[in-house]
Image 1 (cartoon, one colour):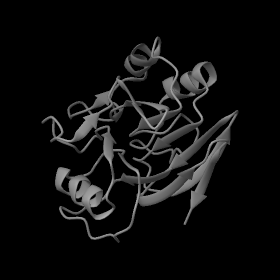
Image 2 (spheres, rainbow, N blue to C red; image 1 turned 90 degrees about the horizontal axis):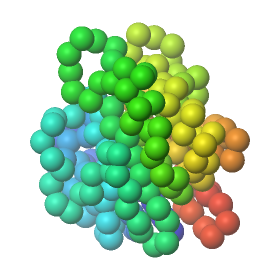
Image 3 (spheres, helix red, strand yellow; image 1 turned 180 degrees about the vertical axis):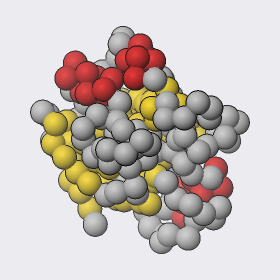
Image 4 (cartoon, rainbow, N blue to C red; image 1 turned 90 degrees about the vertical axis):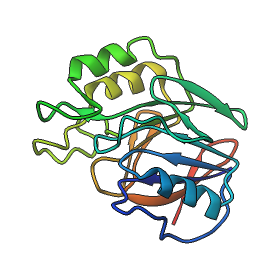
Length: 187
């Protein structure tokens, strides 16, 4: 199965390539038009998404499935997600204190692939006042052991193995292929 993953694109139109993917996963800080146009350009059968700290509070348009604190299945895999990032300023959308994120994920069920706008703490952090990861994601990885955790927010393309979980930071777009045994990165 091929995944097209998007995060943190500062444009109002999809200007990336066309291709074929089974599923589009949107990790936040994206205009709805970018998500929909990319899904069309790549002929994706479904779209799952979470919101970032720069997104509006408006619901996603159909057919986008909002995965914030929810799960969905596609092709035999279970997906789940978490909006936003840590509360780095007094006001804003989808900003959470570390304790709030921990409460959100305390009883969240195990999934195969977890979508988050923010990274786990000390995994791809930029150690500034804005780009600090969630400790709740570290605890979730330890407890639920997802095969793959995808995040945006840090504005970098990085991959790190955390136990049995592959943590992939996306900035812009990335193709990821999943086979029956594991997960392979594609260009």
